[in-house]
Image (spheres, rainbow over the protein chains, first blue to last red):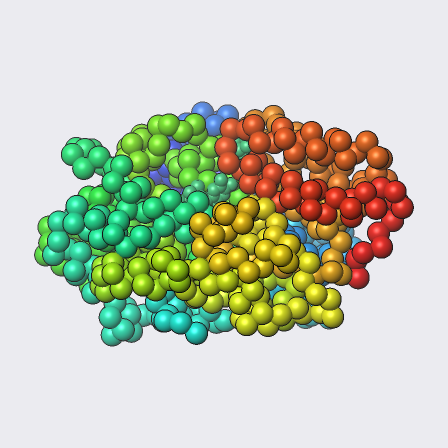
Amino acid sequence: MIPETLRKELSDHCAHYPSRQVGLIYVLQKLQEHYGGWLPDEAISQAAEIVGVPEVEVEGVATFYNWFFREPVGKTVIVCCDSVSCYLCGSEKIVEHLENRLGIRIGETTPDGRFTLLPVVCLGNCDRAPSIMVGDRLYERVTPAMIDEILANAEMLAEGKE
Amino acid sequence: MSEKVLLKNIDPKNPQPVTFEQYVKNGGYEGARIALSKTPLEVQQIVKDSGLRGRGGAGFPTGLKWSFVPMDYQGQKYLICNCDEMEPGTFKDRALVYGDPHQLIEGMLIAAYAMQMTKGFIFIRYEYKKGAEILDRAIAEAEQHGWLGKNIQGSGFDFHLETHLSAGRYICGEETALLNSLEGKRANPRSKPPFPQIRGFLGQPTIVNNVETLCNIPHILAKGPEWYKKLGLNGNAGTKLMGASGRVKTPGLWELPMGTPLSVLLNEYAGGPSREFPFKAVIPGALSTPIFTPEQFDTPMDFDSVAKAGSRLGTACVIVFDEGDCMVAATANIMKFYARESCGFCTPCREGMQWIYDTVCAIRDGQGQPSDMQVLDDLSRHIAHTFCAFAPGAQDPFLSAITKFRHEFEEHIAKRTCSIAK
Ligand SMILES: Cc1cc2nc3c(=O)[nH]c(=O)nc-3n(C[C@H](O)[C@H](O)[C@H](O)COP(=O)(O)O)c2cc1C
Ligand code: SF4
Ligand code: FES
C-alpha cells in the first residue's frame, strides 16, 4: 500500500499533462523510491490504477528502461561504465576489483542486500575515464586502489540516509 | 585558442552552474530580447542565414528544420531539447547543462518564439540527475525574472518549460523513440514520415533539438548571422565543441572553430599519444561513425569534410586507439554496447548485434573459425536493413573495423591468440 498523500501527488502530476500516461515514468520513479529501490507487482498495479492505463502497458515500460528494477536491488547501486573510452582506460580491471571486493559478479546483489553491481552505458565523462557511479555520486579516473575508499564512503552515505 | 562562445562561462574541467545574475552580467538574455522584438519568421530567417547545423549528430540545417513546423497551426506545439547524451565517447552536452543552464533556457525560449511553441521539455538522461536539478533551479530563476512563463518581458508570448528525467536507455536519444518515451511508453522508434515537425509529441507539431544546437541560438541572435558564419574555418559556420578520449595524453573538451583539422585536435589540444605507441585509429564522431586511420587524420572536423573522407562528424567527440590496442577486442567492446542497447523492435538488429558480438568474442578468445569472417561480412550487410538509424550506426564502426583491420581478425583466427594488445 502507498500513503494517500503520495497517491494524490502522483495522480495530480499525471493530471497536469494533456495525456495522463505522460506521467507514467515519473510515477514509476516515485513508486520505486517508495518501495526501497525496486518495483514489486503491487507497484505495477498501483501505477496502472493511478495513471489509468492497463497493467500490461505499465509492465512493458517497467521492463524496458535501465533504471527500473523488477527485483530487489541493494541499498546502494553501483554502475560501472563499460563503453569504449573507459574500456581503453582499464574499466575491466575496475569491475574485476569490485567483483572481488564484493564477492559477486557484475549483475548481482550482495547476499546482505547492501550493494548491486551493474554495467552502464557511457556516463558522458569519457575524458576522465574510467568512470563509475555509486548511488547518485560520480567517481572519475577510478583506480583499483580507490575502490576501498569508495565502498567505505558508500556505506556511510547509505547509513546516513536511513 | 579561438573565440569562446558556448563555453564563455564554462570551465569544462569543472563546470559549475552560472547564476542568473552572472549570466545576465555576461550579456545573457540579450539574444532573447532581440528575438522578441522581431517577428517569429524573422528569427527563423536569422537562424537560416547563420548556417547553423544540428549538433545532435546528423548536421541537418536548423533553420530549415524549423521552417517545416506549420505556423498557422491552432493547437499545441512542442519544443523538446534532447539531452540524452548516451553515445559512447560523447561528453559535451553535460558541460553545457552543468555549467551554463541559462544559455540553454535562453536558446529554447528563442526557438520556441520563432516557431510559436508555448510548451517545452528538456529530456535528460537519468545519470544527469544533478544536471536536471541545476536546470530546475535555473528554470525557477528564469520564471522569477520574467524570462519564462506567461507574457515574457511583456511581449505577450508564453513559454512554459520543464525537465523530464529519463529512466535510461540509449535508444531514447533517437528523436521518435524519445517522443514515445516522453509519452510514457516503451522507447521504440516510430516510422518517419510523419516527421515530428508535423506529428510529434502527442500527435502535435514538435521540434527536437540537441542541447548544443540550442545553446548556439542566443549568440546568433545577439551578434548576428554574419558574425556567426565567420567563426568557422573554410566557410564553415560557427564553433564546435570537440572532445578527445582514449589513448591521448590530455583528454578533454574544447570549443574550436568548425573545420579545425583532426590532427590539430589530437596533437595540439589532446597532447598526442598517451603511451609509447603511435595512434592507430580514431572514431571521429563518437561511437556510431566509421573509423579513420592515420592517413585521414588531416581531415577538417566539419560535417562535409568528414563525410567526404568517408565518415561522419557525429558529435565531434573523438575516440582514439593506439598501436598497442587490439582492434578485435575493441570491436567486441563496441558490439557489446549495440547488442545490449538494441531496443529489440526489429529482428536484424535485435538478433544480428548479439550474433556479431558472440562471433567477435569467439575470435578474440582464440575460438574463431575461418568461416567466421564470412559470417561477419554477411551480418554487416543485414544490419543496414532495419527500422531505425540505430543499426546503421552500429554498422559504421563495425564494417570499417572488419575492413580496415581485417588482418587482425584473420591473425586471431589463424594463430588462436592475440599478439597485438599491450
Ligand atoms: C540511436 C540514436 C541515438 C541518438 N542519440 C542522440 C542524443 O543522445 N542526443 C541528441 O541530441 N541526438 C541524438 N540522436 C539524434 C536525434 O535523433 C536527432 O536527430 C537530434 O536530436 C536532432 O537535433 P539537432 O537537429 O539539433 O541535431 C540520436 C539518433 C539515433 C539514431
Ligand atoms: S534498428 Fe534496433 S534500435 Fe532501431 S528499431 Fe530496430 S531493434 Fe530498435
Ligand atoms: S566511455 Fe565511460 S564515461 Fe564515456
